[in-house]
Length: 471
Image (cartoon, rainbow, N blue to C red; front, side, top):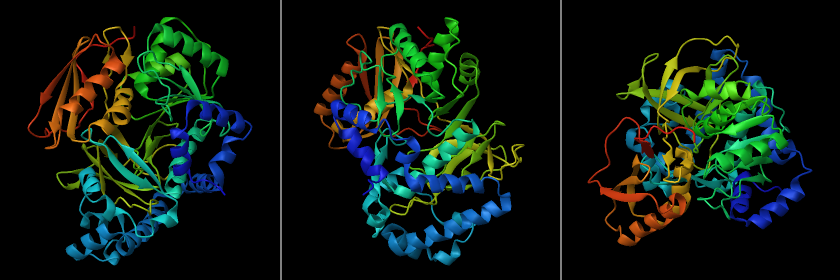
């Protein structure tokens, strides 16, 4: 019997390093295309077809799926059944993307506060798994993801890799966080790398980056010779600068795929260092809407979700900045309809020269995370710090409503907090203990208690007032 993605990932991440190594050995001969399964392959085949539909045909294709998930939500999800009845909405009232405005926006707080109500009564039929994210205020949020939702998201990301001529069974090196963090020494950055048996990717440890770790990782990259390097722009950018400063030119993948942060000025540095094009990817852990950069440089919104860009409660005009609201079309165990991502973007009405009919966005902004510099000179990128907090500190500090980390100097870090009424000093001690393990003893940690969550355009987990440069 085939294990669903969600359960497989959960079991793998909870396994010891020795168990993961045994799995890696046993699964090495199995091609990635086989591990991903027939559902993934069917999704990829479908996306290869639908990308060439005319925009009007693609709109009809998506709206057919929209009507299906709206009907499902009304009949099977208690939250939406109640909401629709309160608002006097029937499934027949939501037939097009424009009709979505009749439904209130769903926030991460709604997801936290109404979690059980948002679970479909027949959720078990969809082979769901539990996933989560740090949330827009640093307070974690959990949700369910269907097997078909994961398959579609993976297929969309692999379609972008095909645009870059990366083979589905090709070698991939990643610079983001490990699937399973057991055995990781966050201060030393060991182990330096780990082969993931599920994704068949060589995962490089992005904690504790310095000259020594980069030197060893570059040697391993040369040995591995990846077709694709994938990960956070900040981390890959540090690696690119290291290569350029040392005139290293023999790390040459077919493409680089970035995600989770804004590329900003890193794109040119990365492309120069690796001698290939960067393909940026936008998405969220909730899989409500995603967009991938094509060979022409346009961001195409994928067919698996409907993207709205909202300003002052209304659809933003072309090139006007607004908040991205997404509706996923494949997640039936927990449909997220008009989900507020807290990301920023701008519409584009231009048709891309690549000929694909998928809508484009002018820009995707507001995902900037700053790196943290330790007193020893180690650089911890924003996503790395956030991932560490989510996995090591959040479970031990359940009574925090907001977290914002500000670095004033390499020896001083301020943690801004909004505490829930049951917050205890033991939670403060846990923050101190786990940050000391990550940052060392040379960084003074101060706390600033806020009376309420600040109102701002875009929250960043980490914010540095330092001009951090590579080594």
